[in-house]
Length: 287
Image (tube, rainbow, N blue to C red; front, side):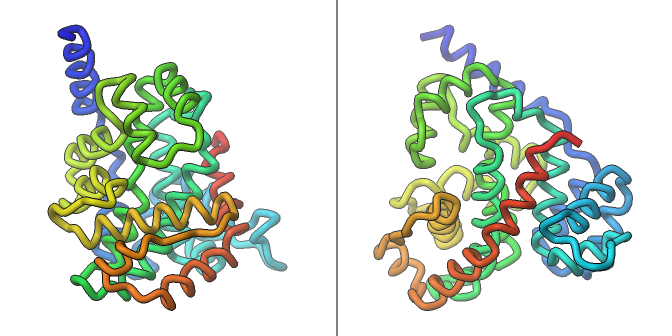
C-alpha cells in the first residue's frame, strides 16, 4: 500500500512541477474566460506565434473551408471559420504542442478534441438559457473546452499505463474512465486536470467543473455550471457517435433549462459536425 501511495505522490509532484503554458496560451485562456476581447485582440495574440498563425490560416484555406479566395491573415481566418472555432483551434494547438498525448496509443485524439470543442459550443449557447442561477457563457465555454484536460496530461506523463486504462475502459463514460484510471494510477484524469488548473491559475470554477462534471449527484460550489458541463459532455459524445441523446430530466429540471433551446443548440452543432471534425483532424496532426 505504501508503494501505491508513494507512486501517487510522485505523480502529483510531476503534475505540480509541469512547466507553465507559453505566454500566448495564458493570454488566450484569460481572453476566453473574460469573453470581452475584440476580434482584433484575439488575432493579435495568435499572430505573435508564427507557427500557430500558419496552422490557423492553413485550416481556413483547407479543402473543407477554402473559398474562392485564399485567406492570408488571422483576421481573415476568424472571419471564415468563426470566432469560437478559432479560439478552440488555437488553444488546442498550443496544448498539443505543450504535451505529447499521441504517445499513448489508446487515446482517440479525434474524439477527444471533437467532444471538447462541441461541448464548449453547446455550453456557451445553453448557458444563456439556464434559469437556476446565472452562468457566464464565456466561462462555461472555457470550462467545457478544458474539462478533460487531465486526460491529455496523464497520457503524456504515463503513456503506457494510460494505454492500458483506455483499452480496459473502452467506451466508458467519464465516471467509468475515472474509476479505471484511479485503479491504475491512484488518481484520475479529473484529479490531474484540477491540479493543473490550479497550477496554471485558471478561473476557480474550472477545476471544480473538472472534478465534478461526471457526477450527476454533485451539490457543491458552482453546481449549475458543473451540471451544465456534464450535460454538454453527454450531448457532445452523442454528436460524435451520431446516436440519439437522452438528456436526464432531473438535470434539466435542476438547471431550469427548457427542452426547446437545448434541441435547437444540438441541431445547430449537428449541422456544424463535419466542420468541427475537419478542425479536430488538424489538432491530431503533427505540425
